[in-house]
Each structure stands twice: as C-alpha cells, then as structure tokens.
Image (cartoon, rainbow, N blue to C red; front, top):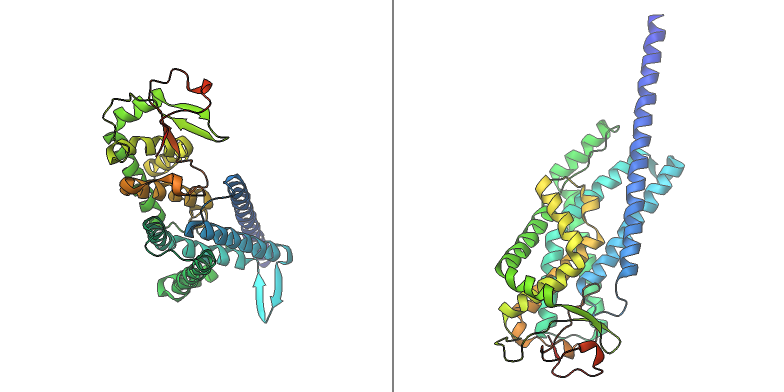
Amino acid sequence: MGALNSQNCSFQYQLHQTHQLLDGNCLLFLIIFGKILLNIFTLGMKRKNTHQNFLEYFCISLAFTDLLLFVNISIISYFRDFVLLGIRFTKYHICLFIQIISFTYSFLHYPVFLIACIDYYLNFSKAAKLPFKCQKVCYFFTIVLIWISVLTYVLGDPAIYQSLKAQNVYSHQCPFYIGAQGYWLSFSMVTILFMGFITSWSEVITLVQAVRITSYMNETILYFPFYSHSSYTINSKKTLLPKLIICFLGTWLPFVVLQVIILLLKIQIPAYIEMNIPWLYFVNSFLIATIFWFNCHKLNLRDMALPVDPFVNWKCCFIPIILPNFEQIEKPISVIIC
C-alpha cells in the first residue's frame, strides 16, 4: 500500500512537472510569436525608400533570427521527441535554444551601437564613399561576422556553459537572462535626451507653441515661424538642438516614456525580448540626431536624395514671420531647409 502511494506521488509529481513545462513552452511560443508580429508591423510601417545603413540590414537579420527561432521551437513543440542528423531533440531543447539566443542577444548591443556610430560617421563625413553594391556586401559580411563572433563567445564561455549544463539537471525550470548592455545604453540615451531638453527647454516650449504642420511640394513638413531680423543662425548647435528634440520626440515620445518607466521601476526584461527592432530604430533616430547636431555647420539635407531615417522626418522649414498666412501662399519665400 505504501509502495502504491509512493508510485502515485511520483506519477503526480511527473505530471505536474510536465504540465508546468508545457505551460512555460506555450508562454515562450506566444512571446516569440508576438515579437515576430511586432517585427512585421515595424518593418511595414517604416518608409520604403530610405538611405541604406548598417542598422537597416541588422534589423533584417534580427527579424530573420527571430523567425528562425520561432520555426525551430514550433517544430520541436509539434513533434516533441525526434532525431535529426543523429541528434535527439526533445521539448527541453526549446528552453535551451531560448537561453542561447538570450545570451547572444544580450552581448549584441555594444558592438551594434559602435559599428552603427562608425557607419554614420563615414556616411556623413563622406570620408570613404563606397559604391552601393560594395556597401551592401560590406554590411552583409559585417553582420555575419558579428553574429558568428558573439555566438562563438557565448558557446565558448565557461560560465555560460556551466549555466546551460545546469539546465539539463533542472530541466523543468527555464530561467530567463537579463543583459546589462541594453539597460546602460537606454539609460545613457535617455539621460542625454533629458540633459538636452533641460538645456533648451525654453526654446523647445517656444517652438512647440509656434510650430505648424502643413504640406509643401506633396510632403508633410513642420515649419517654425521666426522674425526675419532675429539673430538666429541656422548652422548653430544651440539653435538646432531644440528643433532636433522636437522632431525626435514627435515620433518617439511614447517609446521614451516607456524607457523611462522601465528604468525607474527597474523592470527586468528577458534579453530575447529586449533586443528588438523598434528599439534598434529608436537607437537609429538617436544616432542620426546626434550626427546632425555635431555636423550642424556642414549639414544640408537638400543634398540627400533619400530620407536618412525610416521614421523621423528631419526636414524642417523655417519661415520668416512676415508671412501672414503660409497655407494660402503657393510658393513660400525664404524657405530654409535645415
């Protein structure tokens, strides 16, 4: 009788363990599926004809990696236990793949940010202008090298290996990992943005009160009226900063608020969620604004055939206030494109 009760308890424990694992796998499945939908939505919302850069191609590679992960865990979830190329795959490999991807994503923030900075510096300074096809090939091999390097480091790190090995012992648990790189990058960008807003808050408020949205040459633009005899210098960092802040926050304000909430409440986000395409485009716009600000004296968007940002329109018109009604004038005078 005692042996029977012991077998029943063991069976109930295994049943509870399996049920807990299936619930965890279903949750991971839904999260990855939701992230893929977010990737599709973000890539569909962006401008189609934009200046190609490193982050654009890396976003595509990230979307492909998320899709590949989703296909793998879907196949394992469906077959549960099968052998492929001499390797036995079970439902426990779902958690293993998620952990490897989490470690890999958590080490991608710094190298991607650094290479994106170098890419924008070279593009805007025109120090080394490569042909378009050569540039695409260079981006492709750079992205492949980043993925291989980070994945090799993750699989070869002894501490990570011990963590993955421990997962085989306690396979009914699937811990998620938090990367520090994404947190500190978000903290730095939000801090810089806050300092820029504090530095020019009066100019920002004045411009927000005066800003108008209209259509000029079949393109939606912002225009900022100012007195024609004022001492404004368009190619001035102090003058350009509030306009860049307005353009940036006009698109990314909800995302900035979300970042502030995450930082203040110290919300822990798994690394496989934290590295996402909306966050990369947020970083992309931040880098573009930074490059514009540092190169304001030689900035001229009229020389650019394509927009440089898939989401933010950095073309702002500054119209003298002597124009009484801008909307009724077919061809405005003294329009300066910054």
